[in-house]
Amino acid sequence: MRTLRRTAARLGTALGTLAFVLVLNFAIFRAMGDPRHDLARNPNLTEAAQTALIRERGLDQSQWVQFVRYLQDTLGGDLGTSFITNRPVSAELLQALPNTLIVVGVSTVLASLLGPWIGLLAAWKRGRTRDTLLTQGSVVLYSMPSFWLGMVLIAVFAQWWQLLPTGLATTPGSSATGWAHAADVARHAVLPVATLTIGLLAQYAVNMRSAVVDTMREDYVLTARAIGLTPRAVRDRHIVRNAMLPVVTVIGLNLGFVLGGAITVEALFSWPGIGQLTMEAIHGKDYPMLQGLFLLSSALVILMNLATDLLYGRLDPRIRN
Image (tube, rainbow, N blue to C red; front, top):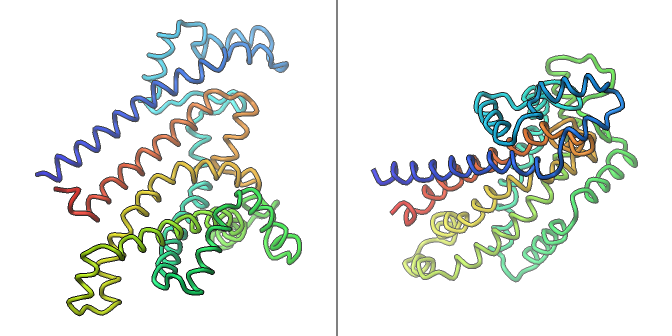
C-alpha cells in the first residue's frame, strides 16, 4: 500500500511537471518573436499565401485563443505543421526519433555498463597503478568536448585508416534491405555511438569510483569484514549495490544532457536524427518544430526521471519506508 501511494505521488509529480512544460512550451516561443514576421520574410510566399497560412495556423487570433487551440491540438496528438517542410511535426519527429534512439540508446546502455565497472575496478585497487591509470584516463576523457572527440575519431578511423564512414546513416545510393541495411546503419553508427559513449562512461567511472571509496568506509562494510565474509562477498553484497545509488541517479538525470549532446554529435556526423532536426529548425526559425522537439525532449527526461526515482526506491529500502 505504501509503495502504491509512493508510486502515485511520483506519477502525479511527473504529470504536474509535464503540464508546466506544456505552458512554458507555448509561452517561450511566443516570447522569441512573432512568427507572422518570419512568414512575411519568406520570399517564396506571396502576400495571399502568407495570409492564408496565418489564418490556417490561427496566428491572427488572440494569445489566449492560440493557447487553448495549442492545448487541444497537443493533447490530441497534433503538434502542428513544420514551416520548412510543410509536413506534420509529429511525422517528422517519428521519422527522426528511431535514428536518435539508436545512437543515444546504445551509448547510454554501453556507458551504464562499462562506466560503473571501470570505476569499481579503480576503487577496489585504490592507490595502486591500476587505480591511477583508470582514474586519470577517465578524467581526461570526461574533460574532452564531444565535438572535438568526434573529430579525432573521424581523423583516425575515417581518414587515416579508412575503416568507417565519416557521416550519414546509410551509404549514399545504397538499395540494401534487411540485414544488409541493418549492417550498413550499424557501420555508420559506430563513430557517433563511440563519441557519446566515451564521454558518458568516463563520467560514470569517476562517479562510481568516488561512491565505492565512500561506501568502503561505512560501518556495515567493516562489520561484514569483521565477521569473516570474503572480500568478494563484501564487494558484491554490500558495496556495489549501495555505491550504485548515486550513479543510477546521475544516469537518469543525464538523459537530458545526452539528448543535448546528441545535437552536436548528429550535426558533426550528419546523422539524420532529432539533433540534426533541431539544428535545421533553429536555423529556419521553425517554431512548430522547435515546440515539438522541446516537448518531446522534456517528456523523455521526465519519464526517465520517474523511472529512476522508482528504481531508486527498489535499490534502497530506506526510501520505500
